[in-house]
Length: 391
Image 1: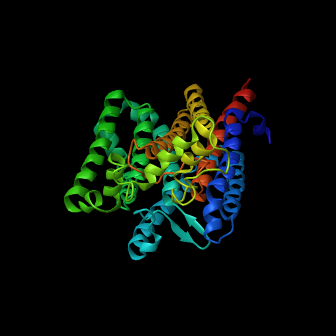
Image 2: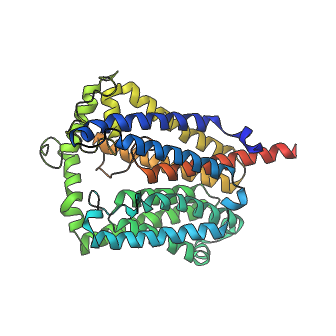
């Protein structure tokens, strides 16, 4: 393939290293609990390795596609419809079947042997959807007034608001926050006049405030009782609630403290031995800190930061509005997930259940983020290939 010679190794190499670290750490974080519970010690290792292989295949397939396929309105409409239907079904199933609700929010749909998380698809659909709309109407948006923009794009705006609303009422405020930030960043990076950008961004923030106000008025139990209230209190008073809601956060602190600079050694974590529940998912960075120390954490976060920086750099350099917006959107997905995951385990923000990209156990996140990187690599390589042909 001619495009392959233009692939960005500054993205590919960190991606591959992170996949390797993720497989090793998922096994290290999960084998003890599996052994104690009488299960296979390699249960999550095998599954994560499968997700990695599947993610690599999807990344390469998307990288190989023609740009016209990626920008196809028909394909994007189908993906949008799948996202919308899956979120509606998720909401219904979450109410009917409480066993499908994880950590207070109905996050997964069970499709045979596969657990699918609609939010992950929604993030990517948001990026592609906004990039296509904003780039195709670039000139009209530049010259238009605020009222014209709202009037001409009310269907697109309604679609985005419905998706965010469906995610928010699961309730998954972390997911709604990510979708809102993606929208803010991509609108701000578009060619819309600054005055209109400030109005649109302000409107999005105001809509979020209104949504939270409605929740507080009509269903205050979302925030003042149950797991969300417990998470807020655990963030504020973790050690006072160590035997209750603060247990996860306190054990995360212990793991980070135990690790020091160089860690206690791979596989030697104490906190994963029944103290930190499901350490191979949301709290896997705490296990990395305990076993590999601050050095290990810096390596992981440094590799993720390199991918984000490279996406932003290529987005800044390109002259194609669509490519630029997609790269900014994908970088935003990575940044917000890292911010919510790391902020949660350090106690800076309430726990949200957001995974660490390519490191935490999980198939939906792995596949969608791999597809996202495949799209980014495709756009960059296609632009380089076309510019070389014109020389």
